Length: 247
Figure: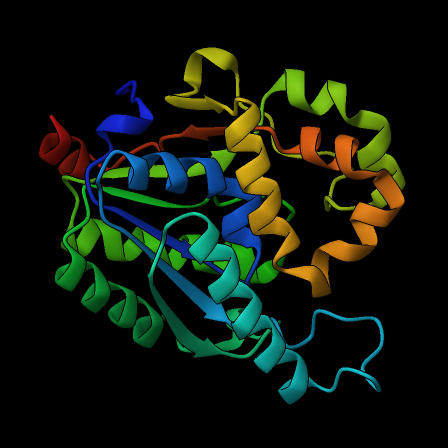
């Protein structure tokens, strides 16, 4: 297990399922990497076109266009200008051809040559099938192309889960009622956002208003801002070949 600091991540590639996944789970990481002069590239599998409870007002094509624009603005707030969509249907990643998806991500990895790859853990954080699938695709591509790069899975800790237990029960965000918990001694990177960085993350999240306005109104800005004011990451259990490459 390699302990990391945000200023020594090298080139960072984040691979996520929907617009706003990257902001919730890694906005601080991306901003700090960019501030350190590192390259950051973000990849999103879908355009999040199903992310509404009002499909009459927001039919998929219209919502997809809006979320594309929101994502560009959100990433810009973090200093990230490199982004690619993979083009999969929101909610349909598990039904896609995995070999093709892994090859797409592998080609991006070969081009970017990241030092650090960031994505969901196999739990998908919330348990969403798209999240779990993107984790599997990214893990496979990493092993094929850049096994020497750090592979970081977004996770949470016992302290986070306990602090926000009531909120998580109220929102019903996580498949098992609570986020995945990783023991503190297995956390390889923890970013506790200071006031300016927390404000910057809030700007990035606010930019994705189609997804965040409702939560902001329900929670209030200060509580919402504090909710994801830390970001924690673990490493996977590597195969012997990958472990040797990382040694």
